Image: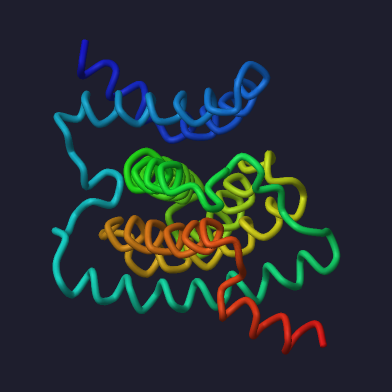
Length: 226
């Protein structure tokens, strides 16, 4: 049975079917789409006897990976703030009302735990390790295939954040394209994307908790809007 499940779920076109079906579950709850996709990934992992390399976990977490992730996080934060300000200038602020942490230490800690467990690991595992990587394989596993898969997966990821409004979806789609490029260059080491995602979200969450913009955002606002 396990072998049959594995061969069925690893057929090249299945990732496309999952990506098409999962968003329909948002009709019931916005989290259903995410957990449905994650359950498919879990089934593949289980039926493959926990072959983590299928999703980009080939290398171990090392000091070099951590250092590289920190540097790339700084690049992503700069890119995010630059893109975010330009997008917000045309489409307004993203809707972050679901992240209620300003001045609330308990909520801040709870959100940090959620970010570093369910959000960071789960989203990178699903959207980069499965949707992006397997879509590229479905399209032919060439450079062009990875390019188009990166665009599709990034827009798909942005749309999955529809609760943040049009501004949030556009910004996330664009910065996800940079994350996709990073993963393309490090597609055997998903730990890099997990750390980048976690550090990036921790940075943003911290300034939401403090109730003010980060110095980087303030700098870009002066440079781009004045």
